[in-house]
Length: 239
Image 1 (cartoon, rainbow, N blue to C red):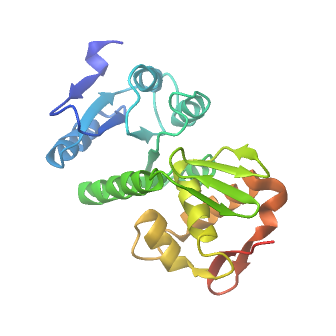
Image 2 (image 1 turned 180 degrees about the vertical axis):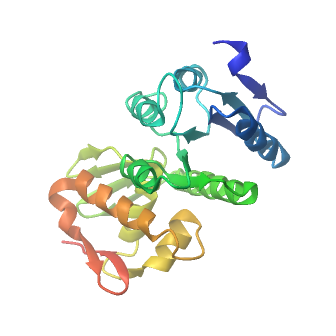
Image 3 (image 1 turned 90 degrees about the vertical axis):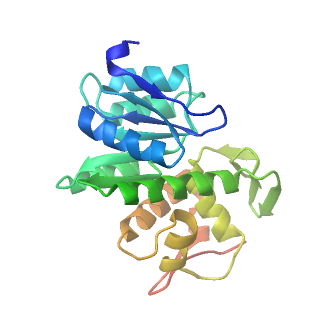
């Protein structure tokens, strides 16, 4: 990998590492600076192919992915990362231009854990990153949970339905686990956004709806167990 497009900042072996795939160098450096201030290690690359290479070579704890990239755009990068066992379950936060609403929606629909629009607040970026890493870490506590027909392995972030593995992102796993642990009880939108994403308002409601749509698609014949509660939110109804 070319040294001119990759920079690494490490301040301790036990620090969480975040890969920044962003072609605008000044933005990448701004992100890296703020990550270091909050005790994260960072790796910066400035085109899509280098991003894939960096992720495969040394899988990070989280990836910040711009969509408009040279050599390989963000959507192609995301697809390649999700199709490889080394990077399949790494959480991804997508960066998009503010005007590209369709890109934000598309990013969520392909399975990104969160998105942030440009220009962005560095403080908000750090809060989003902390929220993603927190829910990912909390989900990995070693234990099993069952809610017919689902069986959860929290240590591996695996969901089984009728003994068949369902491929989920960490956020999707957290969302359906949260609902199943409170089966047959409606969960309001504000609570879901707060507990699963760390949001404290309903500005990001589209995030919730998009993830629910993806969950229903992935669990297929059991999709009717996820019920929309009009005027409230969602609930899992057990068989």
